[in-house]
Image (cartoon, rainbow, N blue to C red):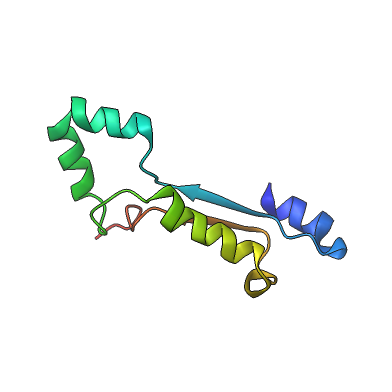
Length: 88
């Protein structure tokens, strides 16, 4: 969808991107407390060893994409998952 919107709106100077975060949320923190063993196993599958911080990791990406430095990035789907999608 981001590619279609980016194609249609690019001529108007509008950038369209999608961010797919693997972020620590309140619900995830609760799950971590309820299932510590499963949480530990899940974290082992993330090379960075943690879930993203919404403000520091995801927020900074949003600011970059909205800034002048990110003005030429459009139509992209950006996964922010600490490498969890990587396969050895």
